Length: 438
Image (cartoon, rainbow, N blue to C red; front, top):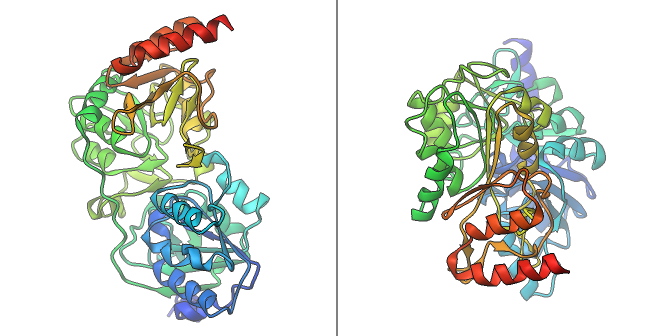
């Protein structure tokens, strides 16, 4: 038995014992998405239910079913969730809280690239709870699907409590936590949570084809979350020598690698290797990541740094939005006055792609929402500006693509109305005319 094995044995315990050291009032960071550790979070929920601990604050992005035990509304008086990016769970819980007359889940606005600094330095998180791959021969645990902010927090938190799962892929790159930083660990060999992509509809397919026409051979891809980026990947099968430098590694990008469309041969940053900071998908994706020498994970403050992004030529950034106003600004975060998602890395990659030689930043959306009753091209945004009008370059709906760079306000309005749904164009023209006159 080497010293790493001895250290592992000393730290190995049960989930209940591992979370017993978390004090009341602690600030706890959860792994993002797939990395949220189910056994540890069930044990923590048990302590909260038994009123053994209270006043906890939980910081996280993109909660999954694994986090549901600690996010329950009935525990809100003892455990306060703080989301940096809302998803379906938060939207459901916010509706439940409204029915009960309770406040919504608290939200911390931040760009994804800033999350490591926000959590490790500004919030000064006390505890990290996350899932990792089994320890390697160097006494380190790969963060697998989720390096993002977890690596920074693992280096700053006073307690690092890990759930070791052999189903978590061992990924290469700057993504390892040494045993010396670990306070306690539990072993939980269960299947990783899978988040299979939703099926693309005919509008997604149409938008995917339009965007694929903007992609040159040798381009470097970043794809955001959702069916639209997946549809773009599906339309790139005839391209060659593409690269990947993306915050999210999704099944669509893995499929392009398998088919040889992505070979990363033209990249300046880590040539020959796909770079990502977190992954969500199915079992095939996780198995593809495991020990793959053509893939590396790095912290989000590196991956999403616009200066790093721009080092690659011909960066293509594809992100979805909720609405675009007639001046070109985008709201990708709120609907009806409620938090719907978050800023994520959208602006990081918009600016990185824009600064890249030959780069193109593309914001995509369906032309309508609410079953066709509302236009996503609007006169004025109903929520915060996620991507300012000064930064937006290409906007794409199923009715076409427009490049807003170099266009005046009047020209932008005309261009955006042309790709709005026909049912809303007349009203938008009237609003544009009134706005330009005022």
